[in-house]
Length: 488
Image (tube, rainbow, N blue to C red; front, top):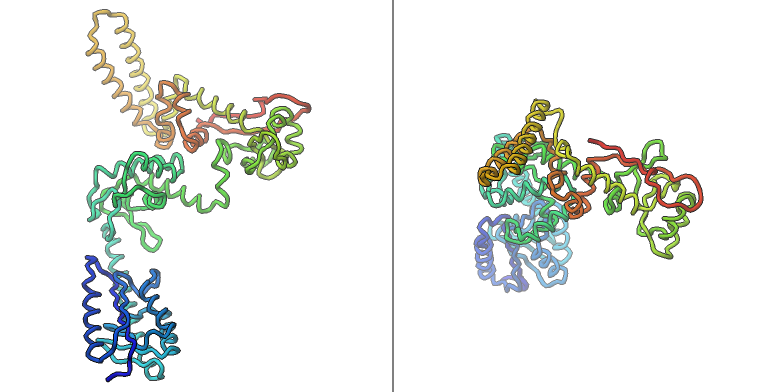
């Protein structure tokens, strides 16, 4: 008969690809057979399936429960298939051996010796066996890293769970999913809003690869993943892949640059709650320091509109006065010498944008003057538009004209115009201005845009500088104190 009266069986398998649990079941059966043969009563069974003990990155819930039972002196022997099932991490092994020693717990292995950790020889043997396990793990890790590098250098796709838009093998694009990926990238480089993209996907009922509604973390992972540009990142380096890309590499790099910029930012929050914060420049600072909004408090409406000189001279005092109808303001980041009521400044800039997008030559904003053959393409576009106007005029004058023929001719000309203008389009401008330049009602189209998209349009079209109002006394807003210069 054995002296052990409080046995615990612990089973674990690092990787259960089929998620059947067969591996831990076999371990449990073998350990149970050993306990029965030794006459050890089993007080508890603890199982961690598909969890590695090597890295320590994932919590082993049942291992922690077992350690709690040991601390409570509910266990005097732990039965395992092999010592490596219990510990392969040096830190955990050291902590576990000390805990077992203090509570008089031994280890009994189906494939291995009995280890009495209350004795020096037992601890020595456990340590030696553990080091052999660690050596095997590290050797296997080195081999796996080399194999991984070979796969990366050959341009093979990553193994593991599939990415949204790709099949499980990583080689095939899923046509029902990948357009959503491309649309998300295009929207992100314009709006810089992960939450906005997530909201759009959820509102349209687009589900992720697991058939669940999208989350912001899922969208962020998708927008950061180089797989969509047919790239693989290994040890900080990018390698070209041989599978089909879901988005152009330059589009993926643009998204990556935005994330890197956000990571470097120290306080990006308030700079994105208003139209011009982080975009407009202070007209007083020599270095053109970007203006920002005040905090959550503004200034009294009558003060902001009627006495801008006092507002600028006593900006901090007004900001501290929470009474009255509060209005947000733009103020200089560096000093209190500039503070302007936000509403009239925003309205002036918005009118500039709408007017620019409503001009007859608004389509020229799409054009990349540095594109090959830009001059010739522009001439073709002008000629095609002239033909469209002439066709419309001729149809209006000819009562006998065939409507279907007119529509067909118009369609062909419009397709040709789109083709020519597409050849000379600037990619960033096209993404930012899509749906605005060709809108029948630019003002209505502008009002439908979210704040992130409006900010992108303003930043593309104009430099905005806010000047000190100057003068004295009570006076209305002076539009001359906001300088708007076209960028394109």
